[in-house]
Length: 112
Length: 116
Image (tube, rainbow over all chains, first blue to last red; front, side, top):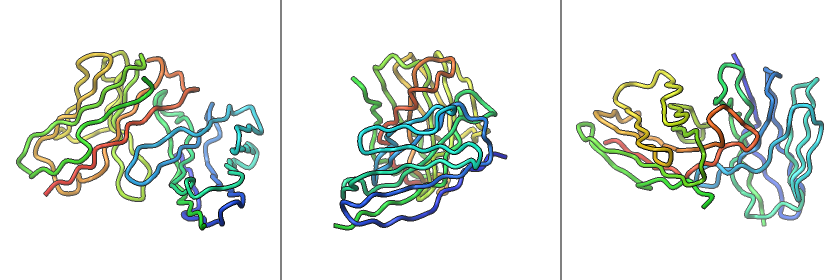
């Protein structure tokens, strides 16, 4: 079945860059997404990339997609304490139009 | 209005109770979803409604009963739940009923359910 893996935890200092990685087994997703979840809250869509793109930049966020290696990453420049949250990557599922396959989630902790 | 509103935010219920979770959106989205999220895990899809019709049921036990009274509202009726059903229940919506995915989902803040 489809599988999306992320490292569990990342700690960075305020002002540094953060890179959150995601690897997946099924490369047929049309869109790939990054969501942010703060404690006790729902998921917030941060950005997404179309599968025929290599890179997308959106203010402090840069998404890199390496389809050959089935690797997706999210870089957050000038990381702030407000960026502390869990980050999920997600892709369309080949088994259904409405279904996502979510990654396991990476908890980002930003140290002041 | 660009939000999905869920009520209540917290709910404690006994195993013999009947309760309902509510979700509302006014963005004109035609697909609405229920997800279940356990602590430190990604959300798991439960149900999808497209154009007010049940499109996907991910083999969810019948003690969970979804309802879509109109295009803006989604309910989840709960009956005879088990303690292992305690979780964060998230509602989401997306544009189009035909699986247009570029806009992603808009999630509500969730209902934290505790079954005692």
